Length: 275
Image: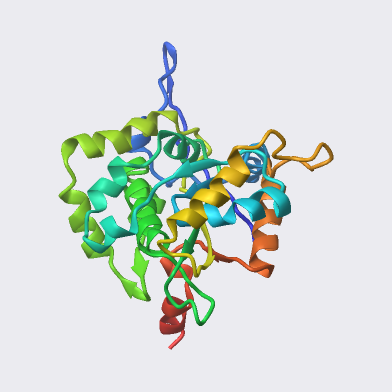
């Protein structure tokens, strides 16, 4: 599976005094044809972008031993996308509670893996948590709309939850966001490199039987955080570059975990399109 950031860079215009200022991101379009040189440069830039891993509190804590001992990830952070807020329809609070590190990593074009465990469909071994199939879907849609206005990625962005298109519902929720919330999203737009034109947000999940077991998560967290030697000296480095990001995706796709890229790539939606 290939992850590639496609450039939406607009060309600068020549003036008598010299080169004019680059076109503001908000006004950029995808009208300029992408050349072979563009693709080569963007691929090279993408390979230099490190991946980031975020553990969603609190069920995602269960993944810490796997992240550390199997994936050999030395650097990971925490986020909190609350399913209870999504159940109540409070998507604005989900946005306001997003961690600054996560937003900045996404703005810089880094692939961000969000780890979580769910209690839905435990018997079937699925367990896709609401924080991913609803929370990440809304966050991705909102960032595409606010970070890349006037571009193809924003114009063609779709939102799918449980196999149903929810673009209109998400658009309505976006228009109802408070001005300060929109400012928070748009603040990170200034840091987006020219070669980045999409949001690379990936959910990693599996089912859990420890939902609401606070003592279990407390013990796992302490065992992985309150120790002097988290990693052995011969542990390989964490996935840092694009090739290693793809390798991580392939490893997770074949293992005990499931990957959530977007609602539009889930079987519930793809099966409908195939009819």
